[in-house]
Image (cartoon, rainbow, N blue to C red; front, side, top):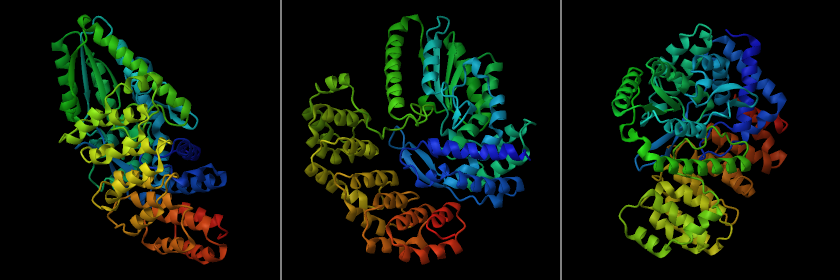
Length: 537
């Protein structure tokens, strides 16, 4: 087993990282209030001591890990979804602690950063951050552009791995880790048990969204990357995205075949629909220049985001490839171009079409805002039925559009009411609808509370917590007592939120006895913290 100091250092670093970046990059999930407890040194020390004792025991059962929740979030097609993990805060601390304990050795196994080949999640000593901020998706794109302009490179292969995180074999990751004699075997065993527990003993899959998973996913491709180097193949990679550079078509196809063969031996395969072989020879200069200009614009947007949201991990943005959920402020140039669009023609065409394309929806929304014709946003709910994956983007644009009239907000809320109460609506859509009904400009407490009352246990892993967060501080005493009575049917995420609401809104007399009972029967560390803060020690 590792030295005591190394485990405790890893645990504190895990908590610092979670406090700084959160537990996930999935925008669907709000930042959990429990994370703020990690800024309390006394609580951190206590939690670290508990986790340390469990790790050194070598007994997985003593880690007290919870089962995973999941929410499906759309990617770039009607049938393509990202299975995002809802990891308990305590579990994420344990998971990240275990991985950080061995992350420095994992980094040593990877192709050296100086080679300019692998750009994803380069671990190092960066205080509350885990990864080198100069290695990210934009750097990968820039490297691809640079390599494409080398005269000897005539052909570019673009490819990515199909369902990468879901298809990673847990036992193969374990075997690669055990091949390094400097990596502690007890830590490997605990990581393996944890992943198998979350995978229901299925042997496949890493939880999406966790920094710990990002490090372990890189482990799965160490041997693949080294194989490509041994074959003299010129490539670069970001997570599951590979770019291969070749002197001619024969070499390109041969190298693609070698990559495919090596991946198959690891139990993973390329996404054939996204695999492209491109001519990047000198007769394609115009295209390359256009790509360069496009990349420059992308870099500018990323820099703008960094200024506004300095704590968001830059290494993540730009890569996920999801259908957009966040409306970004339009530039002056965009406003000028979008203002020239014939909205009547575009909206009428969308209404009449049986199917509509992704770009059509974003263009309509952006054009409406550019033209300041905000009332026309009320026409979109019927159109969005044809491509509901864009409802989050639409709702975010509405929330950020402060000049939209209240009457129009009422119309939009009314249009989505049946979506809110329909239990068959995908959970990610309901979560964003919660934000629509909870907007401060037109809060609709009644529908939020009734939706919570009607929730079934199979309604979803996150929707209950999202509804409770939206109702926090808005309930009458009677309504809060009703929520309190629900506590013993709630899941762990809901339990903590209910206790937070009770803590903030009920009198000492009304909550003292309830909290005392909770303290006796509960072993959750965050719940104990809430109870303790309310005078029940």
